[in-house]
Image (tube, rainbow, N blue to C red; front, side, top):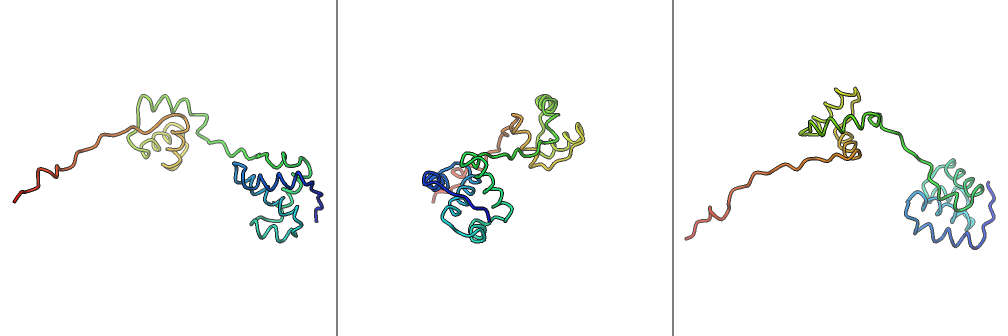
Length: 151
């Protein structure tokens, strides 16, 4: 069991941050440490917060190493898209030859780069590089007023 001594200021800050921090992952970390400061056993903290033993240990070690400011750090960077190196080329190509649908854009990207992605991922990628879907026109429906018959 990891033993940590909390100051009253730290407890107050944990109490505040567990509800008011803008990022939900940080709020969860603050909740875990707040419950720890109240003396709850690790098993109960894990059950209440829905986290694993390893995650609890990581949070407690982060607090021991860098305090509350260390808990506020998010080190997740995600995975870069395989399409990123082709972004400029694809942007220029689609400006000259805009696709009609995301399926058409998907096929064109696969032909040009060899990278196959779903239409949803293609739409997100195109939006991320600054392209947007074109607004299509629409066909007017029947004029309801002209069909009314007066009696």
